[in-house]
Length: 209
Image (tube, rainbow, N blue to C red; front, side, top):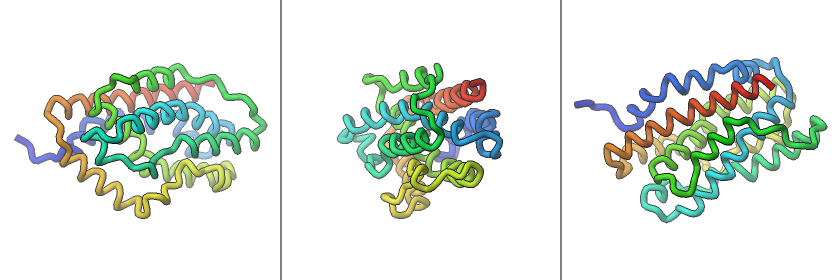
C-alpha cells in the first residue's frame, strides 16, 4: 500500500530517464552557451515533426473522455515552431531543413493512429509540461547565449494559459483524478520512460552532427 499520488509515482518512475535526457552533452552545451543559433535551429527541427503528429492526433480525439479534460488549444506548439524555424533559418542562412535524426523518426512512429489514449496522454504530459517547466529555462538561456530575439522564441510563449504555474498544478491534479485503471497507469508510465529515452537519443544524435 502506498500513499503516493499517480503523479508522484510517475515522477519517481521517470526520474532516471528524465535526468539522462537533461544531461546529454548536446543539451548541456546548448544551455551552457558553447553552441550556436544553428544548433538551436537543429534542435527545433528535430522536435517539430513530433509536435505535428501529436497535435494532429489530439485534434482527432478531443471528445474522448480521458483526453478531453486536458485539451487546450493554447498548448499547441507546431505552428509556433514553424514560425520560429523560418526566422532562424533566415538568421542563420540555413535555407534547407537539416537531416532528421533517426530517433525523431522512432519517436514520431510511436504516435500512430492506434495508440491507446493513456499513452497519447503520456506524450501530452512529457511534451507540454516539459515546455512549461524546463523549456522556459532553455528559452532564457538560448536567448542570452545566442542573441535569439523573442520573435524567434514563440515556441515557449504560453500566454493563452493566463497563469502557466497554476495550469501546471491543475494539470497534475487532473492526472491524479483521471479515470485510469492500474494497467493504464502502468502503460502511461512505461510510455513516459520510453519518451525520455528517445529524447536522449535525439539529443545524442544532434550532438554527433
